[in-house]
Image (cartoon, rainbow, N blue to C red; front, side, top):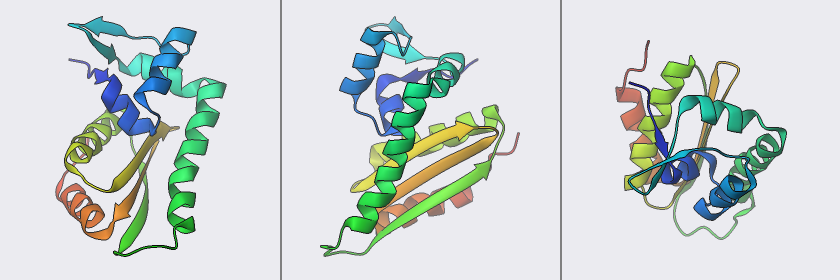
Length: 147
């Protein structure tokens, strides 16, 4: 069965707000189905959405901003880290990686997250409290995502 993504999961993956994503729905840049009042998006729609030139640029800017915000923040009271993972992956494997990080982000505090998949490569960016990012990375290391 094909994985469906919710609006909240799409917001987590992209770093865009649910309001921005709803605006994209209204503008016709994003297409989905409502199931019991919850927006659902399949892989084909996400592929189409991520390839739109306007969306692609917005996502590139958002991913870069996670890193730039980390580098610009000089007023740190606690240890912080920024991790960029480039993971060669098929679309199916990328879906599992995305689902893993989306699930972890529901439990994470003080962590920014960005995900993208393009040309058989997943890019995951985590930035935030060092202990929280380390916990997510440790859990990721324990998982197996081979097809």
